Length: 100
Ligand SMILES: [Zn+2]
Image (cartoon, rainbow, N blue to C red; front, side, top):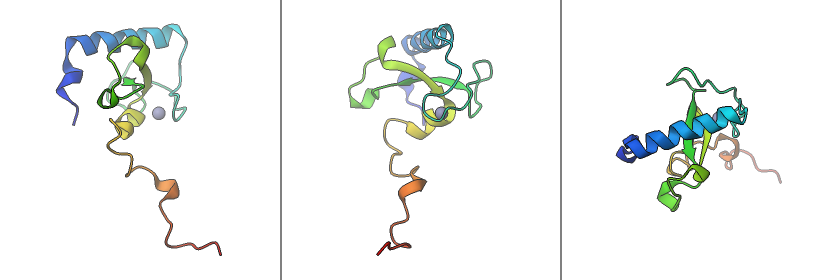
């Protein structure tokens, strides 16, 4: 599931820095779903996690400017763009309703 790249010391430092910055900026909510972020408890759906703004798989870099803090749920949903087809429940029923 998680790539081994995110287990590197570099990423851990980057992640810690991103969280420090988010706290310093007073970020209390996930920018995607607006859920209140939990900075203290890991592994919760609303735990604060560092995420690449531009995914590494799409050329994003491991730099502080390319990392922001989102909730764990959004982070897991987003991945590296791999799960895009699955989590879109809003628009996925084209066959049952015909507007004309
Ligand atoms: Zn979120």
